[in-house]
Amino acid sequence: MYKTLIATVENKPGVLNRVASLFRRRNFNIDSLNVGRTENPDVSRMTIVMDSQEVDARLVEANLYKLVNVIDVQDVTNQPAVLRELALIKVDAPAEKRAEIISLATVFKAKIVDVSADSLIMQITATSDRVDSLVELLRPTGITEMVRTGHVGMMRGDEEGARYTPGRHADGYTQFKAQDVDPALGV
Image 1: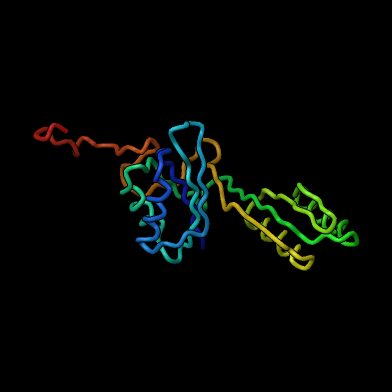
Image 2: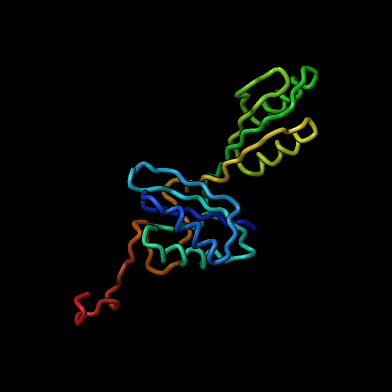
C-alpha cells in the first residue's frame, strides 16, 4: 500500500535536496515526489508518495520534522483529499487507428494536445488508477513516450490530514502545555 504525505516547507534553495537526502540516508523509497510553490511565495508544498510496506508514515513524519525547513507534515492516505496526477502520453496514431485512439481519449476525458502525421500526444489529469487504465488500453496501439507527474494533493474543505508527531500543528510550531513550562528556564 502506498502512503501519501503532504509537507509544507520553506521555499529556499537546498530544501528539496535535504528532504531527498533524508529519504536516501534512511533508505526510504519514494514512489513519486512533486514540489511546487503555494499561495505564499515563501512556502513550497511537497506531495510525497511512498510504499508503506517498507516504512511507517509516522517514522517518515518524525524524520522530516528533524529538518529545520519543514513547516508541516500531513498523512492524507485514506483521508478526504483530492489527489490527481498529470500524464503526457505519445502514441503511434496511423490514420486507420486515429479515430479509435481519439475515442479512448474522449472516454477518459484526456485532451489531444499535439498531432503529427503518424503520432499524437494526449494529456490526462486524473487519479493514478484512471491514468493506469488509460495507459493499459493504449499499450496495444504503441506508446512511444510517456511522462507522469506523480500525485499532487489537497485536503477537502476544512479537513486536515493525520499528524502523528505530538503537539505539531498546521503552523509548524509545537504547542506547549502548561505542564511543559519550566519557570526556572524561562519557558
